[in-house]
Length: 265
Image (cartoon, rainbow, N blue to C red; front, side, top):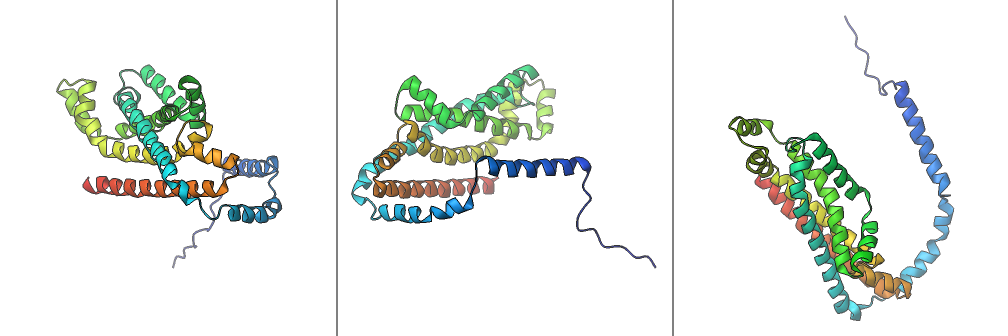
């Protein structure tokens, strides 16, 4: 009669994994110490938070028509920037995807450009374009465009590389070029993933467009900054509520579209 021992609840750690775990824990502790994180200071801020919330009420409803105009500009800025990012990212796929690029060096250069666009924060892009084109929504749209290139360029390329190689090899065997493979097989097959990624980028852009207004890129963000600077907290609260409604509406529409796309394929 053979007996089997129950499985161990904890697996043995390899020395390298243990070392990484200790290093990670040390980094976590050092991070809290470096910023002098103190939970008691946060608790002491409770009365100030209560006072701020009291100053935010009642909401400034008379300002809603003016704020809705700026909110609409913010939404259009996000659409414009994301659309430009999509238009630029799609051709980049032909050079950044491993199965489509004409040469590994070309792929490296394009991937580096995409990574650079993704690495630079959108606030920095906004500051750069405010200097280049001046204050206003154009600077915000261009900043969103660069951020979208970094986001969509990466995911579009990865979606292209994940497509079935069988049809691609068949097109090549028939004498088709890389462009034929891309236009006939890869891009049509990856289009549902492209669309889903583009919708995620749109959601991201709507939230980012609000923040970009704080540095002069136009839209509702500038109204929020002015309200906070002038201690008009009731107007600031109204702006925050409108932003929340916009973000929720965009997410709901995006989720429905994404569900329809996935369900249709």
